[in-house]
Image 1 (cartoon, rainbow, N blue to C red):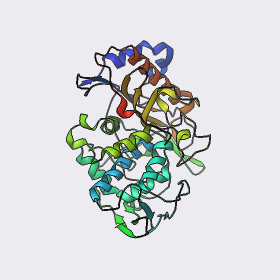
Image 2 (spheres, rainbow, N blue to C red; image 1 turned 180 degrees about the vertical axis):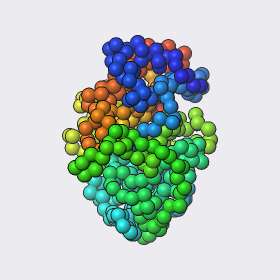
Image 3 (cartoon, rainbow, N blue to C red; image 1 turned 45 degrees about the horizontal axis):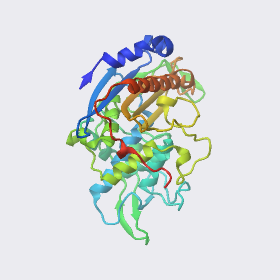
Image 4 (cartoon, one colour; image 1 turned 120 degrees about the vertical axis):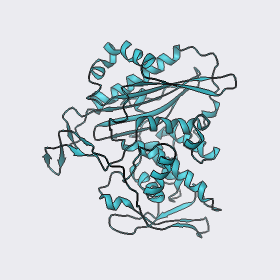
Amino acid sequence: MNNTNNELTEILQRYSSVYFDSVLKNKDELKLQVIYTQIDRDNKGDPGFKDFYFNHDDSNYFYPASTVKLPVAVLALQKLNQLNIEGLNKNTTMITGEDGDGQTSVNSDSTSADSRPTIAHYIKRILLVSDNNAFNRLYEFLGQEYINNSLHAMGYEATQIIHRLDISLTEEQNRHTNPVKFYNSNGKLIYEKPAEKSQLVYAIRNTKLGHGYMKGDSIVHEPLDFSKKNRLLLKDLHNIVRSVMFPQSVPASQRFDLTQDDYNFLRRYMSMTPPESTDPSYDSSYHSTFVKFLFYGAEKVKTRPGIRIFNKVGDAYGFLVDAAYFADFDNHIEFMLSTVIYCNSDGILNDDKYDYESLGLPFMKNLGQVIYEHELTRKRSIIPDLSTFHFNYTK
């Protein structure tokens, strides 16, 4: 059920003078979009969803940044299930080779307790701290065609995940993906994916943003071309989170081919905080509220007891994105919230001068807390059983 106004708009307007006045007045310039989903259970405990949109516009491009890592992580687990090879699973040793210009190999993983690179460990790194290199390795394992064709077949037709992150490669180089080999505990090769070149035909876009951009030490006084950069619509990202948390609530065509263990693994690490992780382990700079933009913003505090946020964030080129499912086990409430906001008041891209701290993160903190407070007061006829999402993070 979709609602373009009603409660979400009313909530934002109610708190406008306190938190959101300048953001709401400049919502189009800030490319602001918000999706809020209320969840109500029936007598059987099955969830029903009511979606509210604010300033939602699929044609208003935003750079999805690290949020593309979520569908790729999910697809990596799906691919393993589809291969259905004895001994091949998310904990199997994965060795990445190289075959051509710009590619690099991986034979060990220094962040892993036993130094082995695995699909599972790459996904942990992605969900705990949004690791770029871990994403690149899963991108190379899957290949461009598998990623995009799979998502398009599920109905996410506008999606384009067509390049690695945090390394400068050409369009042609990003079409090429590395050879990958998997070995069992006895060192026996059990699966090999050869080097591939994607023949994917990209949907034509003409997407240019900003007044200028930095190239080296100088400004190029023209918009930056995003036509060959990744794209992921906010509503699709929101729905991918929903499909991970509530697979039976989406059409069969939009369900990933995952086992219950896969779902539990994803949910556990989407909600775990870096200090709770022992493999990989992180230093104190990765605090409890790291990559939890909604509700915490830039605050480095202890997480609120009883509340878990299952989410994926992104920040790049001035765009801040977060898509989340909230569960409060003490107060028995749940909801979903996703948003994007553009934090680049000078209009110059690649200059590392973005308004994340002054604009984007405070907005996300306030938005998450305002919706949460609203949910605390919202009447529910059925108290939800959230035990499915309650994990032991110490083992």
